[in-house]
Length: 271
Image 1 (cartoon, one colour):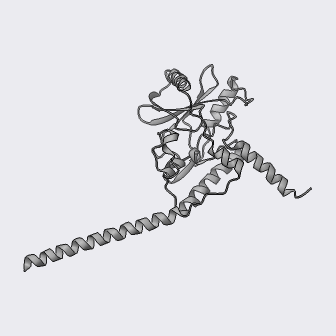
Image 2 (image 1 turned 90 degrees about the vertical axis):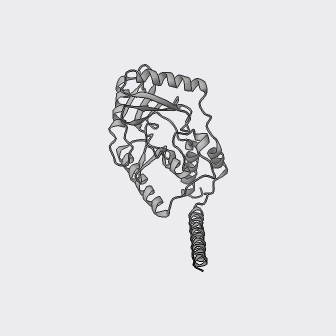
Image 3 (image 1 turned 60 degrees about the vertical axis):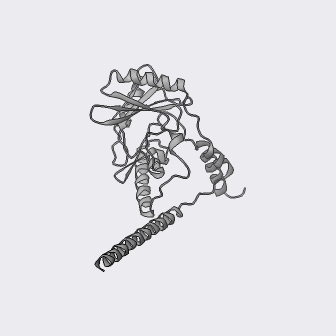
């Protein structure tokens, strides 16, 4: 009799446990579905949609080899040591990334050239020094700091050192991926992690504050997207702000310029 009673109690406990687990799974499912449904695609006109869908071609093996040689050449006279090349972790085919270390800290080294259409004479020593000083002296809690900036001697290549953030960019967090994977592999349309409205409001306010800071300085920053926002301990910080100084255009520059002209024309009313 006692054995049957114990068996019944054990069976009832097991059943209760299963029910609780199923209820918890159902709650988690409903909550995940609820927050996913808060994301809605914005309507895009034909030109913008085509531009968004255009993916820049990855750098060639020849370009990557040349970049590696330049990086190794630069590191010979620095305090950093090469760990490995981070192939295609960014969208630009003319910007290259490497993981380096100074014996105690993981550091992200980037190397990029001046845009061909830029008229800034970066071959002039004083201009090169001014650009590097400006980047290293941007001090704000919402601007990701530059550890060191320097042009490769005899070339129009800007080398930047910043701490390697283990969380990656805002885009990496949204897609819940490892930051050092190639862009083509890590950003899948069906894999994402939505934020709650409170966090969206927090991040939005931080990004706007950082943009206002740069605007008040007269610093050009037109490359705002989730890949250029570093998130560390729930704090958003703008990064890759050297792109504007090198004359690089944002991916959607032509489209937004056309939309801006259309908006100005519409605001004037019929003529």
